[in-house]
Length: 275
Image (cartoon, rainbow, N blue to C red):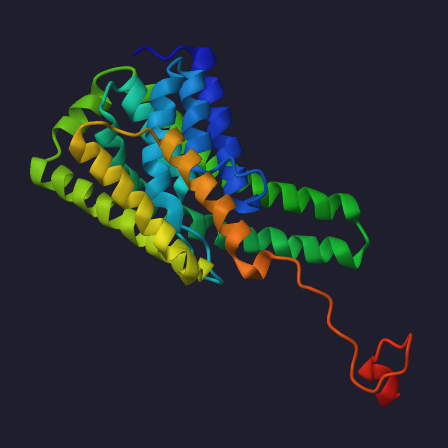
């Protein structure tokens, strides 16, 4: 696929916004499902963008910053993987294969950029001593822009080279044992991501519904009838409504009877007696 100048600029812009969102964590533009879809929209193949984003979203479920620990970069992996699949005419499986190394590379770039941002922080402190609010704002925006460029520049380079056969030849030169290993590792990362999310939710009481969804999906596929994710989501919603209606924790509690010996019209509040 030949990427024209307008598409190249828009891809770089999407990558820049995704880089900003990876730090702000507000609009979630850095998530694979959003970033890949936007890149696919720019390149004229939104369907493939959604497919790649959905596959990478499973990998990135457990990728989150905890304290000072830096997670693999989902933004860089999403934008470049989508460009490679659409412009380089590769399969979505290739996106999964290259997503993990790209995420690790993005993680290293994030650490470098955050280290450079310390300079802007010190400059902001100097501006604060003189009550220079415009200088403080400029330092904050400059440090934030570096995070956007961290994703935009590599994505722009890959998009500029993906129109030819350079990217395709480079991917073809990777040994099969490496790509197969990356596919298997990607499957393990999906499982780890699910496990981390479930562990943080600490909703062991809801685990039967979690396993029930896998059982229904597996048996329907085995029997050849098939079930779509939309239908499975509707079934899950119905089960959630029934569960909430039957669970005593969600029911309105009856009013407590008045304490024995309390005078008529008194609520029997222990706080009044203690006062």
